[in-house]
Amino acid sequence: SLDSTDSVISTGSTGNTGGSSRPFRVVLLGARGVGKSAIASIFAGAADSMDSDECDSLYLCSLQDEGGSSQDQCIQTGDAYLLVYSITDRSSFLQASELRISLRQRRPAHHTPIILVGNKCDLVRRREVSVTEGRACAAVFDCKFIETSAAMQHNVWPAFHGIVQQLRLRRDTKEN
Ligand code: GDP
Image (cartoon, rainbow, N blue to C red; front, side, top):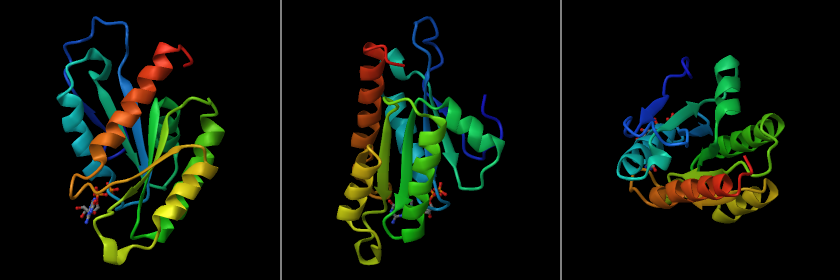
């Protein structure tokens, strides 16, 4: 299990252990302060409200850019990844790109669900990264893109469903 990060959250019911599916691990990667914890807590509520056993446990592993073995472990054990940056912080956008590169090196599987998430889109006046740039970056990195506001609870639910949908698809086609 993941033991050394400050923000690993396990959520959902623990009663559905009889099924064949193991819990999904969703890893949130991004610079400090971009809103990973805020997104994770909304996800936790979303997972709890699902009655299916497919999401009976969602591990949310939130990583800063400090590297080390806990980051390696987190990256290697994820089933899906959210690369989070803040639209108000260009350096966090650049860090998301770097994280995408290390993710590709360590998780080269083609069908690993990855979403680039531009958070804090409620802070319009402080925007440093445009929607166009975010979208272009996602296209280059071959992943999905969404802008969210954890503060306003805007688009976080669709991001969650996007991940779950991709995980189900991948499992159903047995490409994992
Ligand atoms: P983490 O370090 O990536 O886990 O970031 P946190 O979730 O701790 O968020 C850092 C700060 O940004 C906190 O003060 C949050 O309240 C704030 N924050 C997170 N998401 C949003 C958002 O969508 N909009 C705004 N305005 N603030 C946010």
